[in-house]
Image (cartoon, rainbow, N blue to C red):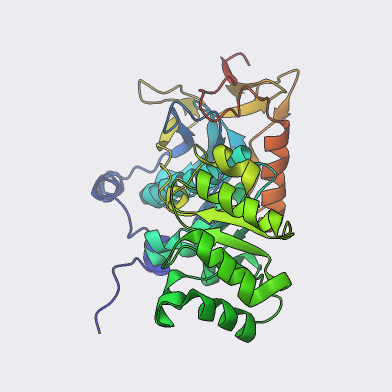
Length: 395
C-alpha cells in the first residue's frame, strides 16, 4: 500500500520539511565555518483583509514542541493573544544553524493556525451569545484536522465535529445528523428522525436536519410528529433561510413548541451570521473557517552577534511589545516603558520550557476575555483596525 502524502513528525522535527534555500544556506555557512548568534522576529506586516481589526495568535505551542531541546531561547506572546500588524509575536535567539532550516515549519504552524483561530473569533464577535460549532474539517486535508479544531475552539467555537480533534481537546465531538442518514434509509426523513431518537444515547441532543428530500417546513412537522416534546431543535443546511425560518417559527409557536430551537449551517461566516442571529440558537460554521486566509507571517533576522541588523524593509533590533488599553508600543527589548503590559515573555530557555502549556479551555477563556474588552471600533467586522501600534526605539 502506498503512503499518504503527509510529512511525518520526525520529518518536521528534523527540518526535512523546509525550503531548498535554507538547506543551501546551511551548507554554505557550515563550509565557511560560520554560525552567528541571531535574533529572529516573527511578525506580520498586513492582515489578510482590510476588514480584519485584530488577529488571534495560535500555533506557539507547536513551535515550542519543534524547538524544545535545541540551544535556543524563545520569547513569545501568550497563546491566544490578540495581535496587530507590525509587531513581533515571537523572538527566537540562538545559533542560526541550530534552527534556521525550521523556519518553514515555524511560519506554517503560526500562519495557518492563527488564520483559523482569527476567523473563528470574528464569527464569535458576530454571533456573540449564540452557540457555534466547527463543522469544516471535511473540506481540508485530514492530517490537519486536530490543528483546525484546536484553533477553531480557542478562537471561540463552543464545540467541534471532528472526532480526532475533539479527543485532543478533551471534549465530546458535537454535531447533529447528516443528509446521508436520511438517504440511506430510503429518503424517508421520518424514519431517520425516529431511528435517531430510538438508537442514540439520550445525552445526544435531539436536533433534526430538516432539508434533505422535501420542504424544510414539511420535514419539521414530521420531526414534531415523530419526536413530540423530545424534539430540541432543527438544523437547516440551506442558503436563503430568512423566510423559511420565519414560517417554521410561526407554526411551531402556534403549536406551543417554543422550546424547539433553530440551528443553521451551509457556507456561512461572520458576514452572514448577524442576519440570522436573532432567529437561531446556534450555527455550524465550516468551510469558511477551515479555509480562512492565512496570515502572511515572516520570520526575519533582526540581530546578529549582538548587533542590530535587518533586511532594509524591517526594523533592526531585539524588541518587545507593551500593551495599554488603546494601543501597543513596540520598543527595544531593554527599554523601560512607563505604562502597559509587556507582551513577550520567555517561554523556552536554551531549549528548556519555562512556562507550562495551558489547556485549550484556558486558552479559549483567555481569547474570549480579550474580545470582551476590545474596543468596539476595533472588533467591527467590516472596518479596518483602529488599534494603534507605536514604534519607539528609545532605550
